[in-house]
Length: 262
Image 1: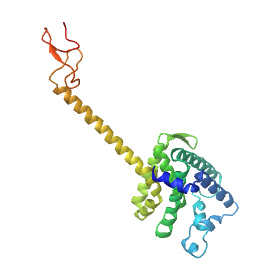
Image 2: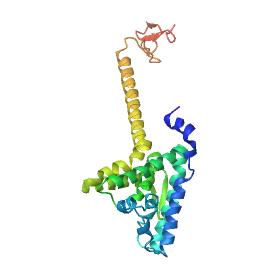
Image 3: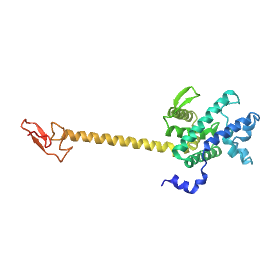
Image 4: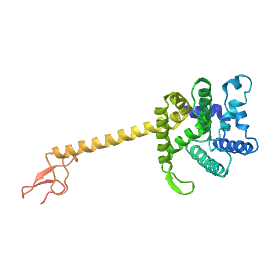
């Protein structure tokens, strides 16, 4: 029984089925309210000084305050629609692979690390609340790279390709802004523990298995080449079939006992 299974037996009450779905819907709610209260995000976003001054609700609401699609409008509504549907697919994919408990822990750790990073790091990227979406998407792309989606209902793309693009963009961001590297390491710790490192170990084991098979086949071929006796009819040798006896026929060729001519 793994550590996650033991935790589930003791902390099963932490399970939140469909957590990413509700997380996405809360973004929709904030977006809808901001149509009438444009200053809403300023009341909800992360502000270390205001939190320490007593506005503790920002510890939670900061995850829903980010609106990366710009001002409310037709385009932003369309982008939000696609993002929410994508979040639903990611949630169902992760829960199908891990189960609701492990997926919930993944989200809890992601949010906790983003919150901690915002508190202790001097430099964090804008829209840091969307880091949970980013880490969940990378996990989904790692687990289901061959799943194909229609980007904006037009362009068919495999999720694995989108995951690679996101990884490259993050790498470029880290190179151009090294001060953000600590944030990336903290915000994507859940991805590394749940999907990244396990996938890497799986690939290494697969590569080692392939190498062992190749070595075995090469050794087998060498044994065949070094065999002293070989049947001219069935090609069996004393190395491949040590139980066989070999004799030279009247024609001067070598046969195994099963094919020796009378």
